[in-house]
Amino acid sequence: MNILFLTQYCPPEIGAPQNRIFEFAKQFKAMGHDVSILTAMPNYPKGEIFDGYKGKRVCKEEIDGIKIVRTWIYATKKTGFAARIWNYVSFTMSCVLFGASKVGEVDAVITESPPLFLGYSGYLISKFKKAKYVFNVSDLWPESAIKLGVLNNKLFIKLSYWLEGFCYRKADLVTGQTLGIVNNIIDRGFDKNKVHLITNGVDTAFFNPENRNEKVRQEFKIADKFAICYAGIHGLAQGLETVIETANRLKEYKDIVFVFIGEGPEKKKLIAKTNELGLENVYFYPMQPKRKMPEIIASMDATVIPLKRLDLFKGALPSKMFEALASELPIILAVEGEAEKLIKAANAGICVEPENPDEIKDAVIELYNNKELRKRLGENGREYVEKNYSRYNITKKFEGLLEDIVNQ
Image (cartoon, rainbow, N blue to C red; front, side, top):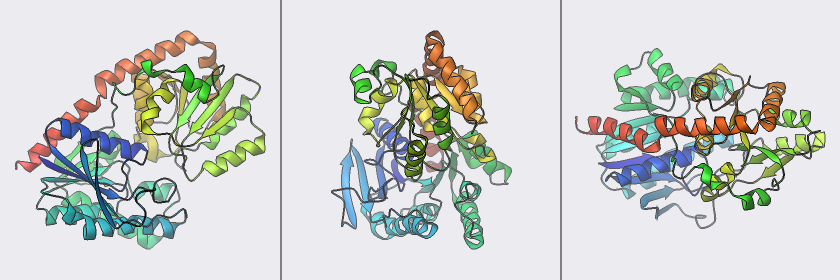
């Protein structure tokens, strides 16, 4: 098959959507398919076009054997509603106007949402290419934006719900990243026969416990510490201020530290709160290259994965969870619902109430005091993802669904 991924986010940017889509692309290529990605000029998360791409309307390149076409996007460091919408809409238009003609024959267009606006572009490109239209939902939008307070304009909400329904109806195949997403779509009356679960996963060869490296621990100033890491986007959804409050409750433990790795709109506020509290047990580091992440994750002692306490997130499966499991890192999970069930089924971590710093503190102390528990939870997690969340097995399922619609 000739497969085209349409996504606003792609390496060299680093993040969950970028990694997931690119890993799917590489797996499909290894299975013998011709794969291309139509994406924006890299600018996430700092809102600035990366060096080497500035001033370009269109560029073509190849990364790890994957053909990539990039088109212009309005990149901005502003976080306001208008700036964010224009950021989304600019690529929504440019990928159709400048990018569609630059990709070859296509059998299926896999469109990543969010941003939801890209769903209409994927539909247009699928018609232009006489290809099947696949709508891949990694986060329910506009529902998540409304509940986080990001979207409150009544006209935009109405238009967004219309566009969401349009994409579900027009798609030949709808894939959801979690069971919560899939059930939400089906429960709202959309055709259940074309809605399927394609979960996140992990390359268990890339992320593994053998990556642990004492030089990395020295580099991150944790050689003689018990280090709990958070690696990922520093955004509204995560509620990371709770982790800072946990660190404040544990400041008397001089050998327990919290390591934040990544970028995001809330990072400045988190640093300011850390400084305000005078905490010396919280370290902030910038986003790291993807190639370094397996060593970094495996070199920590535990990880904390939080989300705000919203019903919306009961269907979430954070990608960073799978990387930690594969690395035999015990997890402190502050998420309700689907992720909690997974960690309990795997017996790979300690589940606590979201936005509860006292429960996170107790979990940290329990892991800190019990090396045998850390080892057992880590080994359990590795075994569980190898059996249930192998990237290869998930891609094979996706391949079968694509072949079914392409051969109709």
